[in-house]
Amino acid sequence: MNTNQISFLSVGHLRDAVTILRNVKRISKEKKVSYHTLLEIINSVEISEKGANLILKYLQEIQILKITESSQYSNETEIYVEISNEIIEILDEERIVINREMLWNYIETTIPSWTRHLKYGIENTKKAIGNTNVKQIFRESGLFFEPDSKVDDQIMEWWGRASQFSRHLEDARNVKTGHQGELLTLNFEKQRTNQTPKHVSLQSAEYGYDILSIIDQNNKNELCIEVKTTMSGWNNGYIHISSNEASKCETLNEKYVFYLWNIRAEPFELKIIKGDIMSTYFPINQKNGIWENVRIPLKVFKDTQLISYEGE
Image (cartoon, rainbow, N blue to C red; front, side):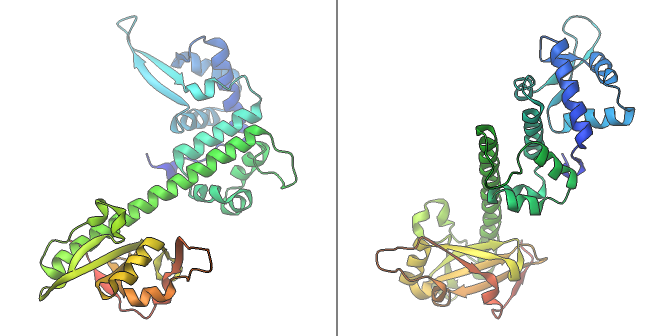
């Protein structure tokens, strides 16, 4: 599904959508009705044909309604519309609660660009959302509130769920990006050395680096490569280095290098940073404190040679 084609309903249409779903539940004891009955319900709400089509299309796209065909009771095929269990369970609640869940379905199904800001809280989410109608839905659902406002448990649960979802998406995206950089490194090293490198990080994170290769075709000594990958470019991107990686870097010294990939560029771009250079950006443990992770901006390596790489 191309989620970019899904637009959030206006406030008025969202209100009509809730009314339609409530009428479906009131008329049918089951969670599905015939398509013909659904059209009668929509017509009873007295909305325009364009509005009705928009609502119906929207509810299908965010998976609140599912249209199926069945010929269980006769030779003729009947078209049924089924409502998701999650929405059925709350249709007797206040409209504001239903609106929150409709909004949640929209976020979970379409994953709009501002979803990644949900984990940073209300103010960051407000700034990230460009659509004024979506902002209004947040406000009318009680999700945009002032710091000193009294907040009920349902709103706290909603934001907790949203924050967790946002973090999960970021983690998954980072894993995918990192994996691409590691595959590029494996191919690059095989071409550079004419030998197949080992993807040791798949075996254990305890190695403290990702790829085990060799210095070059004439020098078979080990080269330990930690791979970092960005989609944000050299000026805006960051890399994160763990204390375990830093420790291995300092122990292995000249055997340890960092391969920094910018996979946003076409062709891909690579910068190779020696371990002793990268170690100058590591924090120093103070007294009883021990650092676990450091974030380093890629722009500090602006003078490093850039290697263009097409891939396989």
